[in-house]
Amino acid sequence: MKTKDLLKKIIVCSTLVSLPASLAGCTAETGQEPLIVLESGDDEAAYTLVECTRDDVQETLPLRCVYTKEDEQEVYFPVSGKLIDKVYVSEGDEVKKGDLLVALAVGNLKADIANLEYRIKRNELQLGYIDEEESLDSQTQYLNFMFLTNGDEDAKSNLNKGLEELKESNDYRRQSINDSLEFDRKALANLKNEYANSRVYAQFDGKVSTIAENLEGSTSNIEKCIMTIVDNSEGFFVSEDESFTKYFSEDSVVSMRVVSGSGKGDYELVPYDMEGWGEKQFFRIFSGENADSLEAGTKGEMTVVTSEHKNVLCLPSNCVRSAGEDSYVYVVNDEGLREVVWVEVGLSGNGKTEIISGLNEGDSVIKS
Image 1 (cartoon, one colour):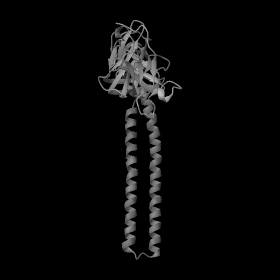
Image 2 (cartoon, one colour):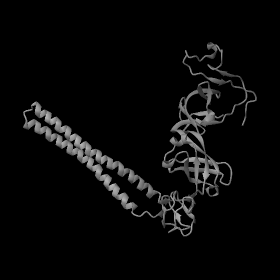
Image 3 (cartoon, one colour):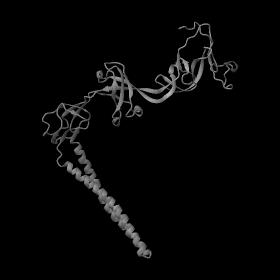
Image 4 (cartoon, one colour):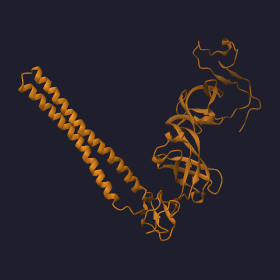
């Protein structure tokens, strides 16, 4: 490939400072496109050309993450002095998140909870009945006043007095029921809390690693670990930047790279349990060339798509130059000279720049 031995002077129209308009030849008054022309020389100039094509342009940001594996749940009871009634698993058993592991004796607690729930529901219905009865009684008194009296002042006074007495009576009934409801709801909350404290569940999918001997029939102790559950899944990549959560959905697939260690390589991740996201965000491995070699603590970097324009006209970003706030590309004109074409650009990312105007699909530009 031949190259020029000597580049001739580049003449830049409308971009050089203090150049007279008559010399620049491309002022705002003329409305002409400003050009940058490379004067031809004796040697043949050779350029690498790139076509303007359609593709997806993505704006991205990096998000650091760490591989987490082998989580461990140490199982304790939240109360002491209660009889351990039933152990539902054995050492080596596989468990799922939410599986019941062990329970304390609760006596008639479930029946007491059911009775309170029934009584609360009945009283809530009774409040509704009182409202309906008061409305009907008020209508009856008013109709009697309208059709059975002459509308004199005594009858009207009796009507108002009757309505007031009806309201006072029903307000007393409402207050009595509301007092009962408040008492029963507090009692129900306490019973439900006691029942919850009598049950311990698996916090994640895993395997029972260890379990204390002779648990059934013994007494609970809040300081004694009775069981250990180990997460034996493939593990998760965890990030800790809540500002990125808006860029993910349940069906997102995000690229991630590990640059060192036994798990070095490119991966695809998908969000895991987004409802449980908070300070930490979890991602499951969708695909990866060295996933089996990943170790806990391995660091990776996700490429998060923050904006995307699909199937737009674009060029490699290194073909697009800037002059102040304007953008341009070099093309080869009909005389074989390099000249500039001014373009309007849009989104830039993943090595591409969107071309909004100035070029057509298939046009060739000089590669940097």
